[in-house]
Image 1 (tube, rainbow, N blue to C red):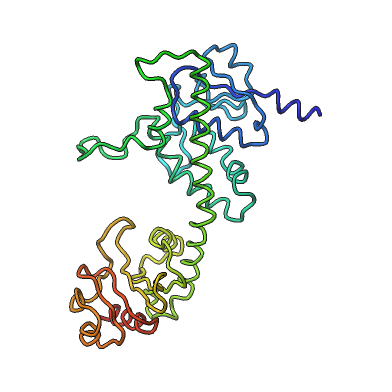
Image 2: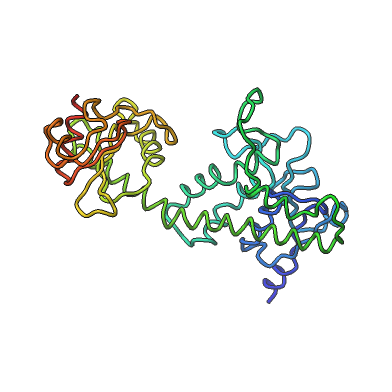
Amino acid sequence: MTRIMSAISKVIGTHSGHFHCDEALAVWMLKQTSAFSQASLVRTRDPAKLAECSVVVDVGGVYDPSQHKYDHHQRGFAETFDDKHKTKLSSAGLVYKHFGREVITSIVGETKHLDTIYQKTYNDFIESLDAHDNGISAYPSNLTPLFKESPTSLASRVGQKNPSWNETLSDSEIDARFVEASDMAGSELSRYVENLVSSWLPARTLVVEALDRRQEVHGSGQVIALERSCPWKEHLMDLEKEQGLKDSPILYVLYPESSVDGNWRIQCVPTRPEGFENRKSLPEAWRGYRDQELSQISKIEGCIFVHAGGFIGGNKSRHGVYEMARVAVEA
């Protein structure tokens, strides 16, 4: 009973007034921990009231995890997630740095991939919120954007929960809006982490297994064959770095088509995950041809097509697509 009462009596403090995504998400994350799951919320700028709180985020001018104080606005603050990151943390990043593993476990349960998910979630979800709140641009300031960013980012949608300039709300109404924003931000983080476990990690496992078998596909070790079609580019490039494959990078990825039984694809590995420049394109003589004509040109049975851009092709069989890879590597 004493333990339950102690948990209920805890208070999370953050500032009142206009709110941002970082403290909205920070509060939600704290509510996922065993220490603060039953804590109440106080939004105030009164130092006396904040001093009574069990944990304080985004206000107070102090970063001291031993006292559960997580502000980032004070002069001289320069904390980052680790020595590999340069982005200064916001209250979201600070809370995630200290409680992120527990938050992830509360969402998906125990997992042997906890550290991988912890790092991935910071890199792809939390860091942009830290940068946004600290006024750090994603691009050099001398670049002029060609278009405006969509107002549908998480930070923008949290911001839209604030009252507009010509809307008058009471403090209690604004606090209610903050809780809505906090729940929305937390829901998106939760869905993101769940997707990592249900989809992203299984794809990574397939790529790991394909890399382990790469010598069976081609003696160069520069071709991998996936047992199922899945998102592979990010995983492959990360794993190449981890395994030190810089001097012998993967050139082609083979995989079965998900919608047509028996058909296989060969896809060139790009120089970067989001680009279309290839490490080695398919032979120029094949590009833009299809079916029997392509089979005659390539001298490989069962060819279906090779894109005019030379980045992808298809064959009716696993053996056929292996042959396309063999010829392409040796060309």
